[in-house]
Length: 260
Image (cartoon, rainbow, N blue to C red):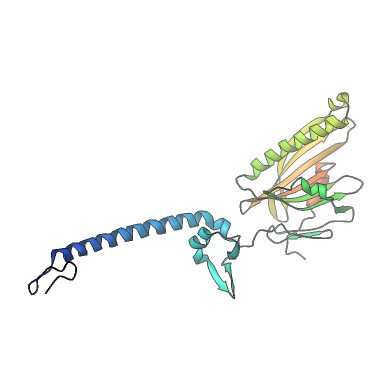
């Protein structure tokens, strides 16, 4: 009888040394394979946890290969397509029909009165970048009141940080405008005030950040941002009005999405 591996002649019942070495090597390979598999599974789970929040907002067809692999357990087949199993309402910039704006994700609805009309394209352009959606922008003809509904999608900001940066941006742009329009003597008597307060809008708490510009003739303009955070995005309701009271009156018209 000869060894099946090396061909060495063997007596009855004798085991070749190469077979024992092969068995030991095979067990070592199996152990190494189990360790490697464990490492891969850990990395897949870790990467999957990092990507899951963003993945939950995509359809299967929009996912990268790594997102499909690490989150495959989250999918279910529906006909010929795949969707992610999640009861979470997907992000949307909402829908504008005439003077009625609705957004199920943000739980907002507003029907504006006739004095507001949809703003021209240049008002949208200020928010035309990869991190921001301008969902709707209205202007009240005759008195200059404005209402904008904007979503900052970049993440990484708290509501407070976002509002502080927005106020600085308001301040810079308003001062440039004032310097272009008014005389130096008039500019010296213009007062700028910044403040913030919690405001309830459609049953949710927003942080209202306000820049008030008080002119020498007693008139004023209030630039306001009402901000709340949801799913790492910031809902920003932008209002320009003649007073804080008027600004609050405009946002008071917002209702919850499901309200008839």
